[in-house]
Amino acid sequence: MDKKVQLSGKFKLIMLVMIVLGVISVIAGFVTENGTRTWANLLLNNYYFLSIAMGALFWMAIQAVTQSGWSVAYLRIPQAMSNYLIVSFVLFALMFLGVHDLYHWTHADAVAQDPLLQHKAPYLNLPFFALRFVVFFGLWIFLTYRIKSLSLREDKVGGVAYFSKIEFASKVFIFVFAFSFSLFSIDWLMSLDPHWYSTIYVVKKFISAFFHGVAAIAAIAIILRKLGYLPMLTKEHIANFSRYIFALSIIWAYMWLSQYLLIWYANIPEETIYYVPREMGEYKTMFYTELLVNWAFPFLFLMWNRVAKNENLVLFAVLVLIVGQWVELYMSIMPSIELKHAISLIEVGTFIGFAGLFGLVTGYSLSKMPLIPKNHPYLLESTTEEHF
Amino acid sequence: MKTNILGIYEDEDVLLHAIDKLQADGIVVADVYSPFPIHGIWSRLKLTTRLPYATFVYGAVGAVAIFMMLYWMSVVSYPLKFGGKPLNTLSFIIIMFVGTIFIGTLLTFLTYLGREKMFPGKQVILPDPRSTEDKFVLVIAKPEDMNDQETKHLMKMLKETGATEIKESTVNDHE
Image 1: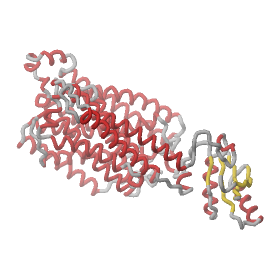
Image 2: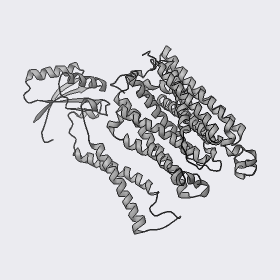
Image 3: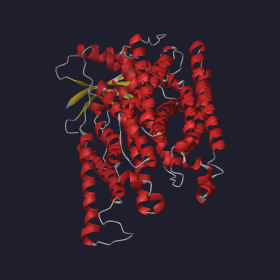
């Protein structure tokens, strides 16, 4: 039960090589492409891994609030991801060097000529933007650190006192998450088109984070099991993870349609302008790929009970969804930056670099704490095959 | 006439362990009656169902049927342009979505009733009526050639696994 994950030298080496590849790609991006494109690419990857970590942490909070038993053995995976938030904070802080390249509303002369931007200026201005960024990250890091340290102290002390403390902290986290992650998505993604707005946008981004965050937890759990850790990951647990993924794929599509259909139906030019480059221009294939990968595939694939209980097939579905989250963010960001659709090696390399960093931080954090919360009151429900 | 041996349990965990012990000794547990669904019974009794496949087919048929209905109504029978939208439009999706759920659920429900030969007002046949309240009833089909000694042994085993009450009950074949 006190078993910790051992990081092999090979794993560290691979992750470091991936990070180096990413750094090379970013430098190559700044040299060969225009700066805006590279900043957008960095924003995509930054937001991508932040949303995975935040979605996974939201899942962890949900488990505490619902007092779920089956998931106890996997709580350390999102807790390890919480360390990535600090890295993400630094990387997002570096993004401030490129805000003028990305965000139209940061230019004072553009705002001076634009009544709509003036109207939005009390919210969309750089000092307030930076303040929100710091406050949100501060809250997330503080709350997730608190949940993690309570859970680690529970390992040493035991009893139910920490259990209820974690539950309370998780409730606070859920409310903070709902409010702050929504505003964070508005700030960093929706304000790329400062004239356009959609009220369902942040809901879709939240569902997308939750959806792909759970997928990432499932992938890490299955990989750890293949490496000989987490022997309690039974078919039933894999089925539970696939139920999450399956249900969230439907909700994701629901949110996608809620946004698209209302804009399509109302047909107001200020709103439809968002979908014009996405659906009609060069991005057409990606537009349909997004739906196919994030909804049609997991929906039809995980529907079959036998697939939903097979760890290799679920792992395959998760790998497709990891591409899916990238496509979703690509479709949110890139058409707002430029009308030309081009995925080059630079995009792939940057993603590999960020994935290496995320993998290294998560793996290192996992190796620093016991893999299974050994004094959790519901641990037996999770580790005994019979009752869940 | 068939005879069943019933073991009545107070707790679902005891029942689950009892099933494991009985099956380890090669005794076939025919059925379990419980006040609520128990996790783990399904795999232990090796129950299977094809109902989800039927639901999938109903859902797919429902989606196509609703689409054909909408297509016929707004493109063939009464084509009416409004708001510059095409006749065969995206807004079908909502009704198709709801209709798929409705048709899928309703037909699954009816299939279930048909397969189980159930209908409103049917007199239920229960081995022990208390299984709808707070008792868990384990049913073992008694082979016709089982002698008294074997029966006693079986009952003793049930007692050892934690059954609070053990009895034989006869069931008519046609029921």
